[in-house]
Image (tube, rainbow over all chains, first blue to last red):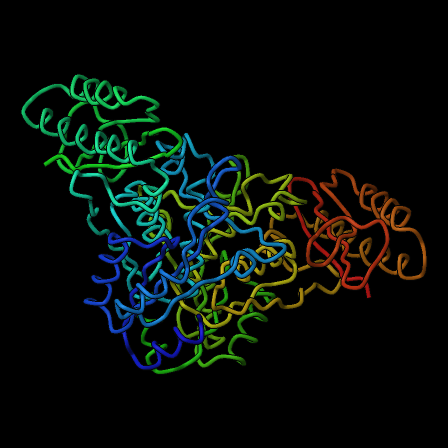
Length: 270
Length: 270
């Protein structure tokens, strides 16, 4: 990977980087498409990062359709695919972890301890390995995007971190590799998440209090059998601190279980 | 700093980097000298890093003779001096810290909680800012050297981390900016540290048990009034795990108080 990246640098070409865990969908494709437009060369990484999964999470069953991913990347004109093993990334004796303190303990961090430490560490390492000029991340994982951005700024990383809009199914469900865990019935029910966020955002915009708008979103979501809410909250778009009243750049962020599948989504107040 | 480093890179010149907290002495000069020999350009940083001092440590009284340091660097042919403020390195909202887990909790880490997290973070950040090819660190801070090396390897940093031998006064005392805290009497007594390490190393080499050799070193050191031992131990030269019997690459490492001054030193078993 480093040799190829050096070769790109030597030619004075710009390099765009799309870090993924594979199981690529149209959301990833949109990141790749943007990276292609803005850089001479594009590298995509596919690495299901053990450090960002908790002991009882879905690491082992996370989908790994490598051959399909490879074909999709080829069809999109990706120049290099970086597909390291766990031992490549975390060789024996590995001990170094990065943590964006505070930001990593909020929201998803409360329900997935250590998750963002794993995310920040692997992204830092991938950035050091690919030497890309720009990295492209989806806004669906909004807290992740803010953490990576903060890390890049804090550590003076040379890369620009570029957030790209969430792609959605027709019924509004955010594209996610985990959507394939949903049964057909759950898949239909899952649309409630975006619908509820959207309705809450509109209510807040038209003057309803944040707490009333979110309470009603909660009730909607919980009307789905087997659903559970980890959190739904209005937050500052950068610090992710909870807000009782709207402000410019504020977002509603959420994590919700439909049966055994955990879904996240977020929406900007406009 | 970044602009100058970019300019060096554009010329395809190699860059050596010597990170310091200033109060430069001949030990630093030897690092600079070696960096000059092995690189086209050399940058020295002077930054008393608040993140590596505990709340009751000597951050505020740490010596800061900037003008003398600047002159020494100029006389040694240093090409650039990087002298950031605390706000440059840790601007408001700064949250990102690197930790070499395990290694950072041993030895000095037990007595200075958070110290190595501060060291690893600032060195990573300085390396990202200077984009140097090689970084030069003294072996006197042996645990620090091992932690930075582990970090560089773990994160795929492009820099080579080069450890350089400790420089000593005629009586064996390792050169350190903190030696100037010592009163004349303490300064004379401080030589006991290296002498004791040296004797212990010789005894172990000639077959005495590690525990006996170290006990007698402890007794020697404690014969100095107002002295205190944080630790003295034989350790593996890379993992820093404690050893009961010698092995190739093993080191005796130690931290000792002479009055109100904390001194560290180490010696390789040969």
